[in-house]
Image 1 (cartoon, rainbow, N blue to C red):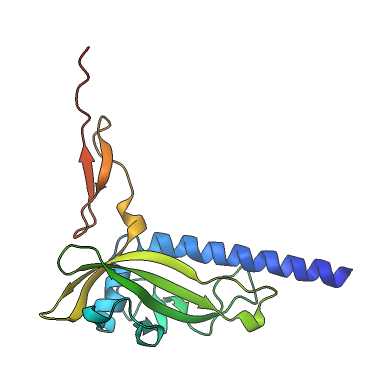
Image 2: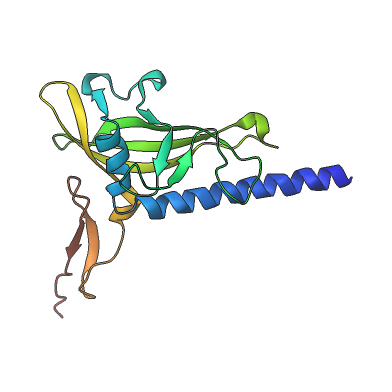
Length: 186
């Protein structure tokens, strides 16, 4: 009986650890400099736009996601290390950029930053954590090189004018597009 309670407690701590990591990712990648550093500066990411979505074996990956846009920044996530202080059994096995798809705007793509976990250490398997990102690229022909990367969550926000509302976002810059409602005539 006590063993079952311990297992359930461990399972809950793993889920809390995963949610903590996802919250951390959203806040760290919101501004775009970390994602751009990892996939455009630190390791130049290229993909064949004629072969998207790419196969799992060709997804760009990194072993460390830094907490800032520099190799001197402390690691935010590292493969084969704990994902969160909330769980002693939640280990990261992979950090990759996958499911790259065109947006319909030249040299602009969406993708997913995927964090995988070591299921052999978990009480119950957990799905990988996924964060949607926008990628801007350069390149003639089908080989594209990532020049910037920004999380989709960073595009959500509010308009500076309180009478405006968020209509959407610019797929190239990720900036919020605000619109003032049309006046209502009576």
